[in-house]
Image (cartoon, rainbow, N blue to C red; front, side, top):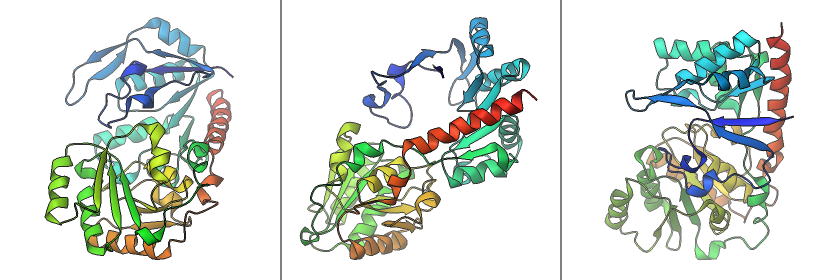
Amino acid sequence: MNLHVRTLVQEKNFHRDAKGRARDWADKPEDAKYDQAVLRSKRVPFSRRPLNILVSLDEVRDMARSDVIVLTGWHDPIYWQILLVAKITRTATVGFYESILATHTHRRGMIARLRASFFRSLDSVVTPGVAATEAIVAMGVRRERIFEGFNAIDIEMFSKLNQGDAPSQEGGHSFLFVGRLISLKNVDLIIKAFARIANARDSLTIVGGGECLNMLENLVRELDLLDRVTFLGPIEYKHLPDELAKHSTLILASSTEVWGLVVNEALATGLHVVVSRNCGVASSVAHMHGVFITENDVEHVAQSMTLSRSSWNGRINKPDILKHPPKELADQFLLAFDSGLGLSKK
């Protein structure tokens, strides 16, 4: 199998988006067995972000030689152009869809109808979890065309640190937040919940940067938590496993979140997780040991933090998340390819 990856921006610019990714996020593995290039397209200014339009006939010819085209978006004209090329050349199309119903800005009207039409036109769709599958089903995509996997992380990178000494309760319970400091993440809510339930030796560490930093620092000062809340700032991804291993409970209380991969990473490290039911990951991990699903308010987050602390017996030796290695998601893509190839030739 040959894999050709085509992107809309250069690899070195992957981190320059609204998600605040670190520069090392874009690193291509040295042993990668695929080629990567930028699609030749014209960027047209439009509203809050430019639109991309395919302008190269050579790119069209290359796509026509493919057996399967995987589309990871729908909102840009270039995706529709590629879909049209695929239909004309009878090339199989497989979509990858991560969004959940809670993150849909447009739930009805023209845009919602266009989104549903796009995904119903694909031969098959891969989703990374239960919540994304619910969103695709709601668009009218037939269930037999949906291949549900489990959103993947480098399990080994995190689980290998689940071997050493776990944080001791004698020094208090160590809570952790990792992510962008923006209003959507509700970090102020986490701080207020911590203030409500914290014992004398409990601690809260906040990893990340963003526009809310000053507000959050002021809140910590107002609540007289300067000795128990630490702002570490952003850290490189390669250092995240070590930081997770220093703590007991990760908290993710976002108003909405397409997934929340830091939950996977924390669970693989053996931590407990308090996670908002509005996060895409919630419905896929709710049954796992050490997971506490919460509503998005101070009272419920505080209750879940208390439950996590009271049930903490050290890191979980064999976390349930280890049953979902990257291969599980990869296998669903292979099944989707086979299904798409069969349907496209009919």
